[in-house]
Image 1: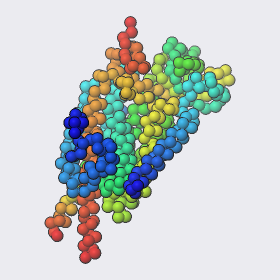
Image 2: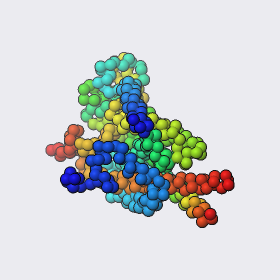
Image 3: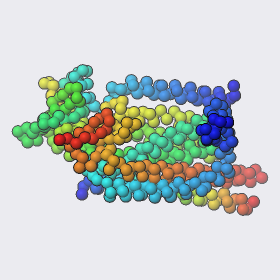
Image 4: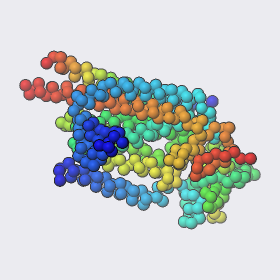
Amino acid sequence: MKAKHQRLILALAALVALVGAGLLAASALKDEAAYFYAPHDVKTKGVEPGKAIRLGGMVVKNSLKRAADGVTIRFDVTDGKATVPATFSGIAPDLFKEGSGVVAEGSFDAKGSFVATNLLAKHDERYMPRELEGMSYNESTHEMKAER
Amino acid sequence: MATQRFVGFSIGKMPYWRCLARPAKDAALMHRFANPARFLKIARPLTGWLFWPGLLLLLAGCACGLFLTPADYLQGQTVRILYIHVPAAWLGMGGWSGIAIAALMQLVWKHPLAAVAGRAIAAPGALFTAICLMTGSIWGRPTWGTWWEWDGRMTSMLVLFFLYLGYIALGNASARQAQQGGVSNVTAIFGLVGAINIPIINRSVVWWNSLHQGPSITLRGSSIDGSLLWPLGLTLLGFTLLFGGLVLMRMRAILAQNKVEARMQRLARG
Amino acid sequence: MNQWAFVIAAYTVTLAGTAIVSVVSWRAMRSAETRADHLSDRT
């Protein structure tokens, strides 16, 4: 076996080991590196009240309500599998609206409602001009269909 | 020979299937460009041919992206940042992939130009990674409501930027020590090890819940509407050609410097 | 319009960065190659 082939095999072996180690570390970090909890994660794993976390998901349509004091808003956050109620007092970002993504920073209160101290709008991977707004979107085929 | 005529392509005088069957023969093609003079004969005219069309394409793409496409239904005008953010991300990651390939060629085949290529890629790669981070931040403020969040995608991209800085520092330090303007083997190993970050950046939005949205363009299709998507092709191609031009320029600078230094040393020795 | 300010900032950063690195690379290449060419003239 030539020295060149030895080096090639050595380098490839090192590369494979490296990628394996990286993937292993990444999968071990899966939960730690998650930027936010989805409502389903909250329901299955349980998050104690008062612990500062981020909660991410979609704002449920027709759930957004303004409280009597005029600053507090109430809305439901869903990931399709579970839904969690949330409140927020303050100025929400422009892109925060019903039916679109949100990441809320805050903690759960004793009653299981999420009290947000900060709201971030989470954009999804769809980009389209205004004329197409309101069309339904098929996530698996990326197809747009006009809604009646 | 019938096979060869049927498929109809070959490398040099060698039919393609012999390259596949005998990897040792591959080296023949690769080592044709090991000679700097032979490389420069191609690199000299190619530099301009990559750089100027690249510049023209990316400026045209930017102009189309700024003035001809409609605003996004949700983000409004800020969607236009996409046309520079995506090529910058692609080149930042592509640049490091290039460094890793060059490192492999340097370590395994001891290809003399690979070390030079790795060093030449580093600065443009770092530039585009920085552009990607900055444009992303500028886009994030109006869209997400924050300049920066430590989510998986952003953090791994920032790590890539620091990897570039480390590689540049290591490369500059080692290039003087009789490496003929290229990077040392240690720097090449660093480039190879750092490549682990590339798949992590790519999968970060899939593995971990992140603030950054998932991939818009996948093998199944694109979730960017065609009327918004088309200038992205122009800027992607434009920035990529320009990147190639920059890398060739930097390689030529290093090779010319080598020539000067070699002569100096010969004169000093008398 | 407020949104345009962000767009213009992003494009300015990108084009300025690309221009600076392009000019620096170009000039480094020119000066190095000129020096290398003069070298072979003299000897």
